[in-house]
Length: 245
Image (cartoon, rainbow, N blue to C red; front, side):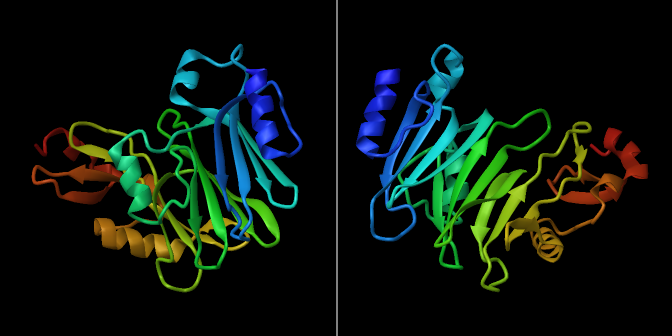
């Protein structure tokens, strides 16, 4: 295990960190677009501390980014990031919205309309929460985390063509019976100093995608009819969940 990490360090020709970690993936690519090769090392805790499933799936707790000029950036997630392309649905979400510049199933690197790049990693979902979405902005001024929210990635695009990158994240709905669920709208985040929820774009996107929107989702639920049509109703009508079908 230690030998594998030292081998990666030799390939990087850069200072090493956490020599007891187990290397999961080594990526060579011009990450910041300056025409010079860079390295990304994804690693997990030592074999002694990792369970068999984490080792089998290739989950990881640390991202080490070595940019040309000996610039080193390290990010960690004790709860682990996981591969994003375990199934066809995940792959289509990424390739259908923005092209992944690197050949990796564990990281996503995309260009932005601002002229920078975003590096994305996806973590575990817990209970009724969607998966963790960690986003790092790579620009001429450095590398900065600009998002670390629970949201299933749906789209990366400049939705309203205003010259700013947007991310659409899906929330997880909880079942309330055979034909009802909680109301959890998709959220649109717009990039500024970091990604923040854009209320205007969120409403516009959800009205177009679902046909309805409510700012306070806690006061509503979704009724699904036999024909598949979804209707937004106030909570005082939840009795309809038992006899609509």
